[in-house]
Image (cartoon, rainbow, N blue to C red; front, side):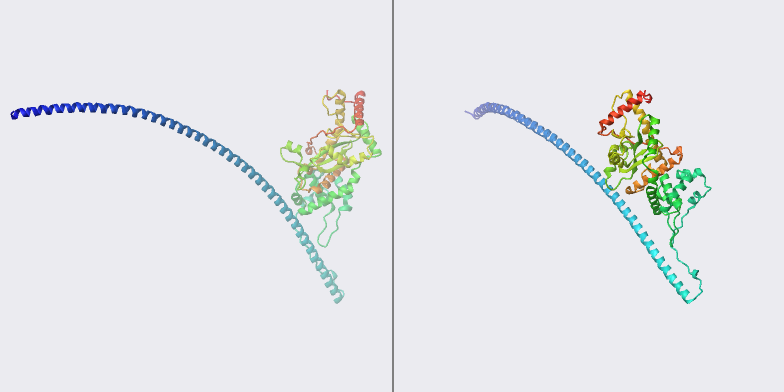
Length: 515
């Protein structure tokens, strides 16, 4: 075999070998592809399961986040609510503490003001005592020196020595000097003092022995007329003491002292004379006048209770709180009561002054001396007519207050209302004439009964002297009446009231205004 043949055989063999290797390679590649396809499918299934688990885990996480967010919102709302409640409680406590501190500082200021006034008064008294002592010592020393001079030099002039005088502030008395002149216009005098000069002079004469003072070595005494004028002008105008001081040229403390002194004198000297319960002939005259005006027999007086405004007291504040006036005026009101009985002319015959404003009319009546006299049998057989705020008693006659009144009861109420109006009009003139009763006064609570009693006595004097009141001074009363819890205190009085009502209608004496 030649070289060429062997080469060809080798080439063919090599080609066959390559063919076999390709086939083997194809088979192996097919197996690898099959294996790869199966592993790919398995991987896809695992990936799908992983994605499902991830989705479930994601949903769980989202749900947890939502729950946490809702819980956080709830906690935040609860925290806000608690903080708002704490803030509201803190604000309330702060307001209460502020109000308490303001009240405390107000009371403390009032206390220190009162203490300063007391200290000022004490210092003034000490200075006066010191000045009086100095003046006395000086006068004694001068008199001793004069005696020595008389002893040393007979025939010397005993009046040559000069006495020292206490310094007094110079104040103008021009206004009072003008009013005190005899030719001062009567109308102007009556405008300031609510009475004529003649009535004023009568009061001065009757009080002269009680309030007159003598001159001293230190100063000249204030005349009686000026003392009375200071008191009456203060009661009539209700002006503060600083204006009274300017009018009369006197010190403020002096004016305050004069008002109390004169009011005390009026109450002790003039009240027994001008404010008396009717007896004997005067009692019969009162009954006749009331019966002729209303047709109701045996009426001895008309009764009414009014309230006088005061500054809130430092003790027993609740007792003097006037709930009805506070509700109507829409501001806190404190007062004391004045119960009065008047005759047909509007003159007071009995007064009860000073009970706290929280007490209703029936309780004031039970506390009065009038009730004590009635309990002792001194008012047996007579009637005192009152309003619906009083109970029906053996001696107190009041109108019918139930609903759906009969014709007879309406007629009775109209007639008894005419008697009751006499007392109400008298109190209206009392407050109109003495303006100090219309507003809160500077007078201390313990001194008010004396001042109010003096006003009632001066009212009686003016009424008895027929002093006409200026129409501009008219005052409207606003005193609320509350029906008592026990409006009937006597069955006999109930029958007596029915009998009076029947007689009024039967004899044609009842009114017809209610028709």
